[in-house]
Image (cartoon, rainbow, N blue to C red; front, side):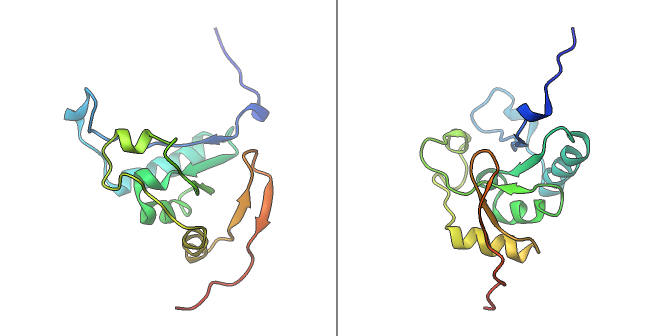
Length: 135
């Protein structure tokens, strides 16, 4: 049996990083940042039916998420609260990761991209075309 999903049904693919803590496959170990970036690049190439690839920075870290924008990711998780338990269940270093809107904007600008605030259906709400402020 073949299932076909219409393009309009797919919004984003989130390549979640495997964390070995708290699971029965902990003997496998975790991949490094290079493999995480490869995952983003291969996802962008092969999953062309997904219009967006999301960098989930609480799992990969801010720097890897920033770099992933150059490896095929076009979206980055922004606001996160306690309802997002996936990172806390994996015993991540930071139990409650946070990044301000300004930090996210700066990170995206540093990557050479223009930050766009969007709604859950990827409709632009606010486009930040202001230049990156010099430190």
